[in-house]
Image 1 (cartoon, one colour):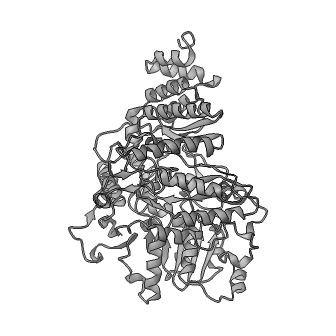
Image 2 (cartoon, helix red, strand yellow):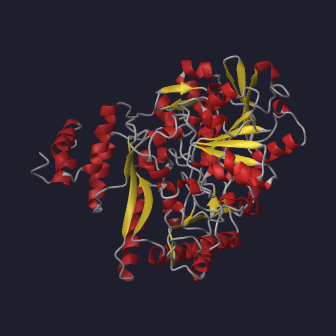
Image 3 (cartoon, one colour):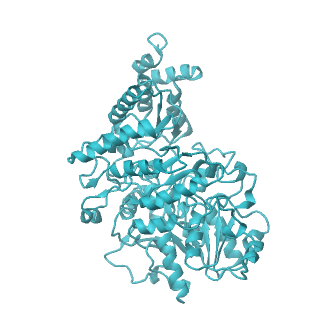
Length: 612
């Protein structure tokens, strides 16, 4: 293992600039997370991209926004711009539970210390920088910017908020994965173009006076209902969302415009997905793969969880209604080359503390590596948010063979004892019967090898619910497919003398879910001998169709009304059914089942006598 020195990390202090002999910076990044120099942490990725473009870049992790703002001034004024990466997680999910209770720790902060970032750091950091350096441009990036680029529902304040550009005062927003737009921005600035004139970079958004929209409003643009119209009419917000999601999932999207006050948010269409060579280039940058030395002796839990894992692809075509991955990474899969992945695995084997076990060889979904459309021209015209819901697209080439080959090559590397798959597995891709028998054979082989060689005692899957009505709204497969997969999982375990667990994830209070649906879930999972532990109450996050249903009461695609549990009492009434097996819940569940006239389920859960 090469011994790292302080200069191997991007600088974070004046002293570190001096060690490099730098007397100025081109870009200063502010991060809501601790600085971990690893390709899973956005600030590190953008920092290394900028460095590779020849820029002098520094990172200020978790600046203090409560004092005299010295953390915002300590590195001075950059030549080009300030960049803000608020964190790997949305700050509000990081800070609060589904019941809006403040969390007591932060996995992205040394020793889990809470309170090291504000709510909405994109807004707070930008406002601080604009007070101190009003003439220096501020660029927003990361998941908080992506999900809040247009009018969005904020669950924690229970209101519609305008684009984060309006609330923050930032000059430019980069949405999605930022490699291409940030490189183009830098190229323009290095070429002498003033920042204020840069309005046409794909995958960026900005605010402009309504009469100064570049090129004017054309028939090719999509003009959404204004922020003010959405405030007055929830149906208009629902109609807006359909356009936003469809354009986020198209190869060739339209420009989106939305008036907010007396200005217009302009969202330029995204770049096409990166190709494998471009994605490799991002992962192959000279990361140390470790936290900055300033954190010596402290533990950063989010890093500990991923330090011996490898991300093999980007994007997810599942399109789950409650998930933000496709809104941020897109639905099209970009896979790394086998050579790039093997190079990273070799680097991991040299890390301190590595004992031969890879914790995950996966991605946003475990088994989508190298999957793509058979006919790309069909994909280019498609605007569906999911390639597998309500049914698997006939144009999808869902071949598991490349993953099998990759797993086997990784396991042959010196220093690797075992590679585990920690990412969630899409069993619908494994169970589907394809016209090409070679795909069916590869899926069977993958299932066998996954269960016998790559499970660390427990395999995570996410059926999310048992009600097919709710599952359709979730864009998830019927529960019968989970039952089929469980039978296969159990048989493979028996045949191989294994004693492994299948761990299903479930959600309560999702739009469309009723108390009766949750009671049925309890009875069905009891029949399958599950005592659920991986469960959560639905948390509405911006830029998901489930959140739009929760706020507006409408399905944006059909404009039909959708019931949603919204009050604390309604949500707790649903959540309690997860825990039917705990004695302290028994009497209140029996009363609840009597109230909704489902004594039959009380008997299934508690027996004929106790169910009365």
